[in-house]
Length: 61
View 1 (cartoon, rainbow, N blue to C red):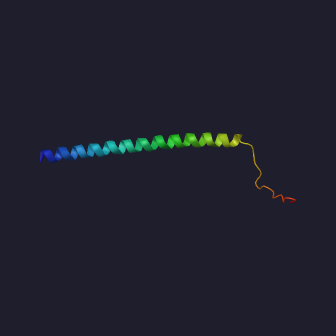
View 2 (view 1 turned 90 degrees about the horizontal axis):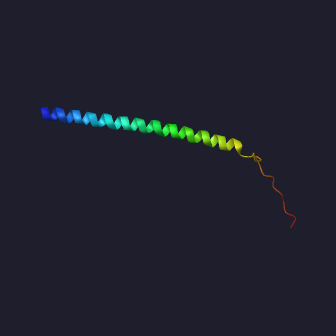
View 3 (view 1 turned 90 degrees about the vertical axis):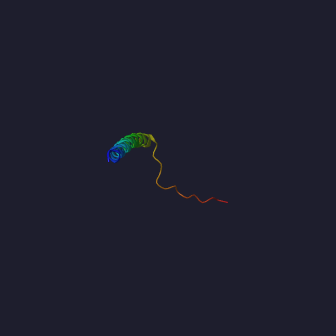
C-alpha cells in the first residue's frame, strides 16, 4: 500500500513538473514572438512605400 502511495506521489510530482515546464516554455515563446513582431513592425515602418498597383504599359512593338 505504501508503494502505491509513493508511485502516485512521484507521478503527480512528475506531472506537476511537466506542467510547470510547459507553462514556462509557453510564456517564453510568447515573449519572444512579441519581441520579433515588434521588430518586424519597426522594420516595416522604415521601408519605402510602394505603389498599390503597377500601371500596365503597352509596348510599342
